Length: 86
Image (cartoon, rainbow, N blue to C red; front, side, top):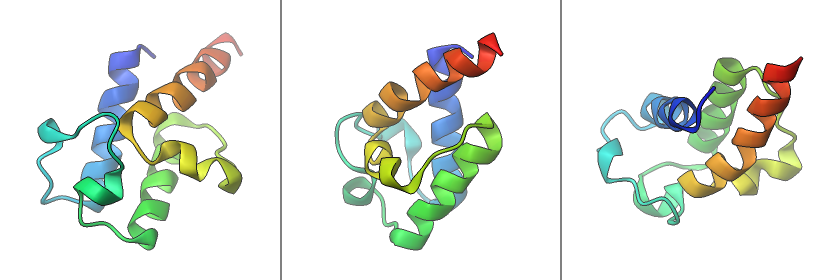
């Protein structure tokens, strides 16, 4: 997957938990909870959505790394590179 594919997947997963959000306005370095009206269950569902769409294991200890779009990109891009090589 390209970084653009990963970004689109992250935004699609966010849209699944915050359908009313204007995803085009997401600021890369600002936390999703600050920008969107999501709670901890929504965030968990977001992480589950990423797992399902990308097929990567995301341990609970890494959830904070997924709190921003920038963090998602930094965390998921190397994982997708590894998945692609398998």
